[in-house]
Image 1 (cartoon, rainbow, N blue to C red):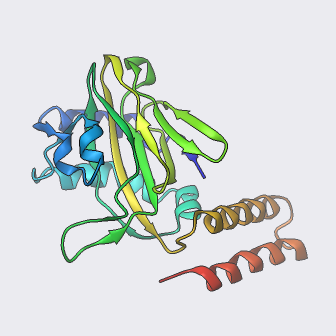
Image 2 (image 1 turned 135 degrees about the vertical axis):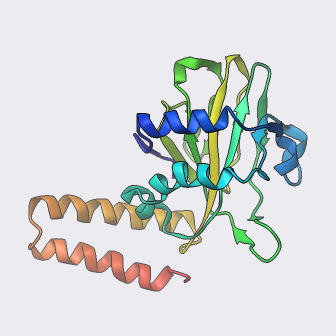
Image 3 (image 1 turned 30 degrees about the vertical axis):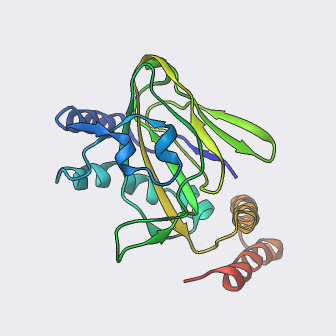
Length: 224
């Protein structure tokens, strides 16, 4: 389940994010990678120890976390902070799967849903596509500034080499109340059906049935 979320960040927010990132030090991104991912990772990340990262996280992640489609698709139980990654010419991130358990000691969470928020325009760089392997083949993602994409953390994925310009993104993860991607997909389908029915006939019996079906499946599957 790969879902794009357009216009998560507006132009004013993006301007503030860029101004803050311009003041930060970027370090070798391999420091935050675990397992085999460290071997194939070649990027830079804003220093996570900088106290200004808290304000950056609020600017970028709160609009994403509050987005209705994100809530319906991810059904988040625990949410991570973000890493702000920079890819310059020659940099890439080879094929890997995200670590299954992340976070500091005492604050571990399971990674179920991976998130990328694009921070600069697609025309600002060549290459740098996020490539996610899905049951329907590879899906290549390169979105406009302010857009986001979410997909199962269990997916093999990579970032193709940047050949011109600079790719700037924020990446984060969520532990879902519903562990299985297939069940999250079914619940999202029901949510979208219910929303469409509410728009046409909110009091119809079929609308109530759709809502009841989704609610009861959540009751069966949610781990809270």
